[in-house]
Image 1: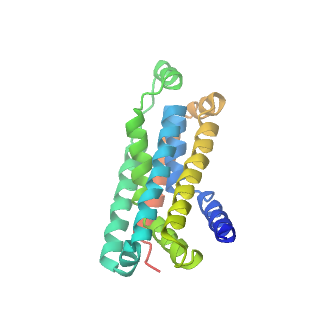
Image 2: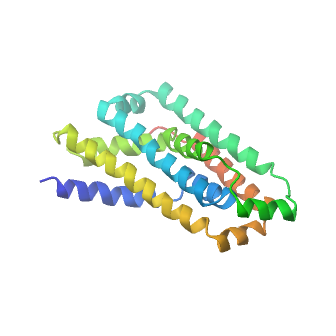
Length: 209
């Protein structure tokens, strides 16, 4: 009965999640910089962050946030500050000795918890995701659809997001890929830092629509 609605939700989500953004940048940075385990845990963090958006969409809190300029801006500036913080940290990366570069490729120095938190916070604080899920749950999904079915959609969105970024992590944590990026050393960190800062600035100057 709800298959048509579910397929619409799945297609829209696929187009959205495949678009490069803060989540993609974080997972790539964790995967290249710290290896497959860190990349996968950051991907799982992004997936779990989806549950935040689903929860407030189901509760109607997302509508309040979207209609309140103060709340939206507070969330926007918090997310932008976080992206700028990790971007500036990456920009300050220093050249590593050949031995330490080999060590970083051999074993991950990033704890699973830190990688998970990076993904979770990046997704959970993204106000663009707030507007996306609010639109999804108010425009695409019929308000008369049972709450349990809507929660099922939400669980699928979280799982699909986690699986997508786990694939991204698998790709960018491949030994040859990491070795290629490792040749650039700290320049890769600085490049990712520039991307994250750019995303933070773009987010900071975005407007509620």
